Amino acid sequence: MKLSDILRERGYVYQFSGDNLETVVDTPRTLYLGVDPTADSMHVGQLMGVLVLRRFVEAGNKLIVLVGGGTGMIGDPGGKSAERNLLDDETVKHNTEALKKQFTQLLGGVPFEMVNNADWLHPLNYMEFLRDIGKHFTVNEMIKRDTIRPRLETPDQSISYTEFSYMLLQAYDFLELHTRYGCDLQVGGSDQWGNILPGVDLIRRKTGEQAYAFSWPLLVDGAGKKFGKSEGNAIWLDPKKTSPFQFYQFWLNVDDQMVHELLFKMTLLSQEEIISIMQKHSANPGERLAQKTLAHEVTALVHGPDNAEEAETASIALFGAHSFTDLDLDTVALLTREAPSCVAEPGNDLLDLLVFSTLATSKREARQFLEDGAITINGQKITESRPLEEGDFIKDVVLLRRGKRGVALLTLLQ
Image (cartoon, rainbow, N blue to C red; front, side, top):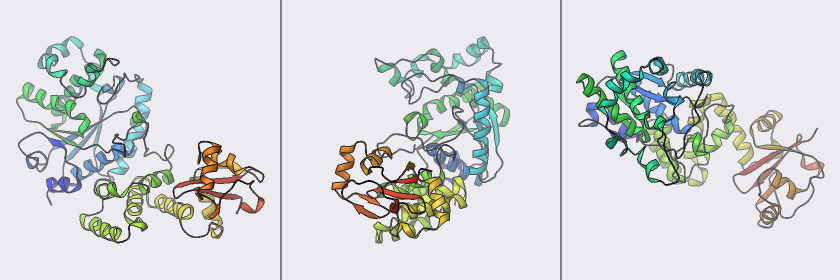
């Protein structure tokens, strides 16, 4: 199957330059993706982009991952309402090393080049840059870009010249990579389209040669917001920031309207496998087979098969229909390590524990949950508040649940 067909099948195509998609992606090229080094981990919003890259390299393309050690110290204005904090060199270096490890794992060990634009941006002569690069851009065109215009049209927002110049620097990156490595394709999320195209134009004006652009749609949450650290909804790929259990739960809890799309975009399963899964899911939606498959596949991809199995075991123990009292010590230890938890002891009032564990926002809400029959202790429904008893602790833990998805593990205060 041609790469263009694969990209269409997976839902990875948003925009591209050139006459048709086949011209852009079915010819072997050297492509690059720019990565923002403002964190030492990628998040799920970036994961889809890495899977797109994996398809490109599997099709025989050469990949360059460009870390914005120079541009990251300025900040891309796209999708932001305020200036970013500037990064120091040590932070950029630390974050770059961490990102390289994640790319190496997620790309399945295929070779790729990783470069830092600080190598050519830091020694750049400002006057030469204005003369050789700046003259090819007009302010009239720059302020029309989607990354710039909203900041100018909103009265309580502004944009500094520093961020305004980001577009020129990214275009210069593309030209530099074209000159050094023969790179002729830049890829990125749809929010980067306005920053990618100027590089295509710059290469044509400076060299007379053709370069291309390709973008994929952004991954958005149920509220339509893109997943990202600045949006306050980041699910990190680093297990120290988001545990494998939390990561698994995130995918397990996607709704039916999104799960079919996410199986195509976020896993390596074949089209035939996904169709079969969705047919079985449709026959019995209550079993949530599609969500379970999605959660297992993505967790295994990011954290490895063993961690995916552990997260699945913990999830079944917490949300399954079997008795909590039947769990063995190894599973209890796993839950204690992975599940949301807080300490408790006999005599603690249930209303207080519901609030303390964040299963309720107030005692009034906790009381309402009890009256509605939404609270269970170790699988047993509780309809009124009472103190915890010694008998509630099974192997020194209590499973406190609210509804189908709210859960907290109460561990005995030692």
